Image (cartoon, rainbow, N blue to C red; front, side, top):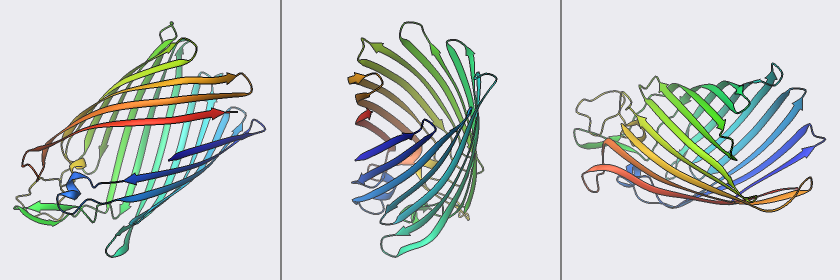
Length: 314
């Protein structure tokens, strides 16, 4: 289940509480080929406070998640400031995270820390178009691997070993336009790079349209392409200090087709509104240099993601 409650106070303060339960019923392919399937639950709690001061919004957030072998806590602060008569919005943000990493057989054994800095600008270009540019910098330190994952060196299975520091950057460009007939389109591009030599590109296009007074339809197509980390290898032929077989650090590409329907069930302006939401995503990923040990061929992933939720404002 997922539950979010937001309460406004005096039109200046907004309080948010969130509960999210993630039930996992199987391991990822790079773990299940050297370990075994499992079942576990991750419980996440979040608190947020948003305060409006003239043309600025200040947001504070706390989150905590717990599962049998991993604990994560984070604190974030974001400031959004409108300038030039509301034509330009500047966003600044910071997040500090601290994790405890463990393994079921031996308990918690290490820690990981995360620092995330972000800045962005949103600009109204015309009465129908706006554009935004956002950049994010992340610094990670501590245990950044997976105690359940193994690598291969000369065909032999060995524990993976990754650096204990990682520095990454991401740049996102986005444009949204009103097409004039109760519909809109959006385009975005994201570039990611880090000091592990991972580079990726994400392209996305979407289209939204109102149908009647009750339905909002939304669709999108996303393409993702990534190059491998410098110490990634499907089966290393050289013994190096660092080695991993984490497929997420390999070379792969993927496509996602998604659609969403929002139905306004009941609405009384100024009093309440109830909406039903349904979303479906179809994903297809192909890995160029990761072998599925169960079949001996290149690994690929086809998946579908279904979301159903209700929103009520009153």
